[in-house]
Length: 288
Length: 273
Image 1 (spheres, chains in turn brown, green):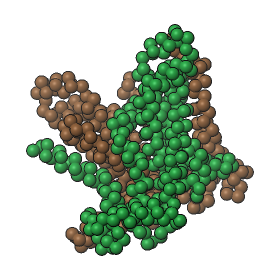
Image 2 (image 1 turned 180 degrees about the horizontal axis):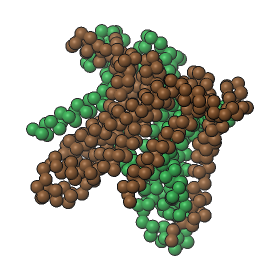
Image 3 (image 1 turned 45 degrees about the vertical axis):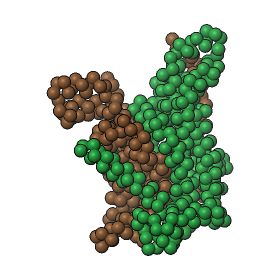
Image 4 (image 1 turned 90 degrees about the vertical axis):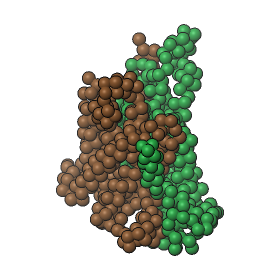
């Protein structure tokens, strides 16, 4: 029997549930209503229902699909790179870090700095006169690319995101790698498996759940990226750096297209539900 | 030999991943004059003038205001999240309620891009008069912090043997007393971790600060970006660097002091969630 009665347990849950309903449930309902209404800043409180015109407008908007494509590519590529580099670092550096755990601190530092702040810092790093990167590129090669123009902004932002968040993937893999029981490793080496073979056939399969989870977490975070992109480029670079989050922000604040922004929000919500459902399905199947 | 290679890889990783921070710290100790001819990695004549300017001349850019706003909003956002999540975590760990639907729902919340709620929240805040207030920002940060707080606390309370509760109940304690007087002291380390981690997350939040504050309640992350926007093309990079260093310092210091607890809770939140 449970220690706390169900009714009493419910009472302890109530404040949290009430808070979330008020701050998320209500906005979600507003989203749904406004997404099928004609609404502007002047008529905020009296939206008129108008069917699915906002959705049609969003789905017909080339900028919307540009933003979807940016977010998809950005999320996939950063998650992939972060997981690969993080996995390599975790496996390769474990002998070094196991005895000196203080070395973890500098590896984790990027996770403590606000992504928006990192974005601002790269404005300095990449600045053509004050930034060390263009300075040294000029010094050594006599030329430096425009890191934030239309052609290069995407790649630059990839690198910025990957460098900041690889430590996250690394940390998860490092913990998972350390959690593999010693007996498993000993058994593998007694059977004559080389270190590489043990890694590929025994250790990586054991770490697979963590790999999947880390990839999804990083994919979702990359997909919805806002802070560092906005802080570094505005949204600028000729629209080449518009993630879905930035699209929604701009439609609302700059364009005043509330219905469109809200409809895009609902689309994003449905997309994230689909991803979550997929993730739960995968991890649920593994547990069975 | 292989160990040497490991040290090399470690050093490259640390330098690359912390590169923007390192550059900013270096630049913050350079005078405007030196910066005009030396954007490199060495400092010819180290100076504190950027810091004295940022901390001394507050008429145009008041960094104390931003730091204060961030502190207040982050404290609300962390304290309230724990106050709401702790009883809920106790209920989930010790009763039948909430385990099957509520917990997974709230955990999944972490993966939902919160910007989709931003527009209705903006309108709601307008009606409630919460726009541009520290309280309003703090309430949103509470939402940001709740999922991880709940996961960490549910895990921590589940790890406490239930015999402890039963013994206290035998002695006539109510559930409420057990929760506050038995469980709370036992899971204190988890509460501290939740607090530190929540504070760092809240301090580093940017999107809602940008959308929901304009003047009186602007947090440090947004304030720093104002500094760039306001100075247009002619950014004073030394001063700007000092602003960024000071703005990033509180969470970075907390994080470096508590990195062990944070790494453990990050992993717990990701894997058990």
